Image (cartoon, rainbow, N blue to C red; front, side, top):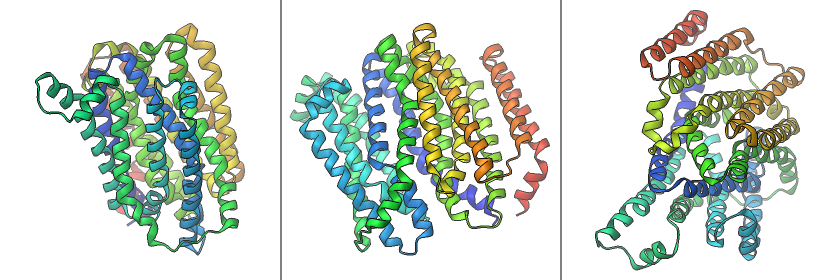
Length: 484
């Protein structure tokens, strides 16, 4: 089997672990929008925004550092235990301090009660302690086990969402049995809180099942190795925090400038961009360990270039499909018509996410050359641009400012990464082919959304034309992959 075919196979396997849980979460979007008013949906969005920040902060780049050191160090067990012990110590300290000052922190973060914050802290603690076990399953090529636990987590989350948001209200309305402590909770707590409780229960069960994996290895802590891992990982942590800012600060600023109702509408439509996010996540799951494992191969750069090309092809195809049938996806996922008014952000967000995926491809150069500080610089610059554009233009053009800011930011950091990468680790990307693919995609998306929205015959023709262009321009590449 060729290297490229093996990469596609691994990406599909690991992608199931990324896509299926998120697909279930997409289905839950409709449950949430049907059972919560837009203000409550906004509160749920804020909760998960801070969850993303906490996860980026507490893992401090250790997952990527683990991949880097596991593939180049001889003592694999020492890498595993050093990384895990480091995360264990810092996470428990975070949990202790946060619980002591939970009332003050909750007030500053804008939570309605410290109970919400405590739930978030516990969820983040469990998820952080599972970073190294999950990373080990990926780097040791155990996709089935990895996928099982990822899917189990979201299935549990979905089950408790259905229980709390559908079954319990219906049971109470018809006088059916519900445990007394749940009845008391429904009488005193907002409905949105039970989404957070479902999140906690899912994280707890996954933690209890997977945590014993850590004890399969001899405990061996190496301070020097930890220092090298932190030197590599801290810039990635800062990059992750900047990325979370790019992805989530717009929601917080929209809430401030336009109110929670408008932010909730924007956040719900933003979820339609999750299809591209699913694709990127699936790619990243398979690509990160693969890139490190291929680094010492003689044709590694050519392999990275071919992967970039096909990543853009499939991402562009997904974008055309989503935009061509956008109203169908909106009715399927969003539920209430009040959320449809922000659908104009979706094409912009999809293109922004495609450029984010391109940036992930390009980031291989600074990860393999141990220049992760450049990723930090790009991400900080992107975050500053995101903040500035949102603050300046939200009061002028509303939530479209947030969508355009996201696109501008991801295009910029992708271009910066490409030009700096040419200097330190030049990869021969097929630029003409990539430019042609993006041009056809953007043109087709514009025509489909602006002039032929709702005309599914034309949308289908645009998709078929794109597919034909790809087959015609890349027929030799397709034949080569098919034969090997």
